[in-house]
Figure (cartoon, rainbow, N blue to C red):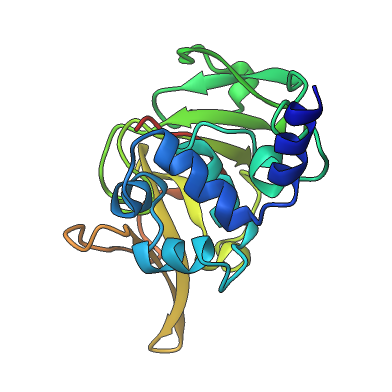
Length: 220
């Protein structure tokens, strides 16, 4: 028992980089494979594992998903962080396409998807991606958490990935607003360099349905 306690205590004292490295090696992943799974630069992961930098919250979220660990295990926080209690989850609707209205009113959902309690809200839903327009940030098959915000102004979500409707067609793009010729121009860009940006002027029907707030599931 004393030996078990000493192992747990040693692991509790580990840096987050050491815990990432230990789990990565346990899964048989190289740093490059982990970087691709988490959409993080391999050099950044190397620096984290060596203790040269502390990862940002979004990076911890992505690494936890890629390593199939709760965030608390990576962050630490006590001698029992390697034996966490069951996480409390709640379910949200999971869609295979951006709903055209309130998620609660849509009949198109695939199923329900469990998320951590703090991620749950009645105006949130989960979306399973089918296309590669946001690679390498987001990949086909990823499940993201979306905040339903049909009233938000494009200028207020500058640079964020949003679920949009363009002439009735759903699309997931990064929204920016620029001034061209003295007039505001909405530009929808994919992170995939092969995707041609969409320019939204005064013509056509455009709306933001929601804001992507977090990656919640990614298969290795």
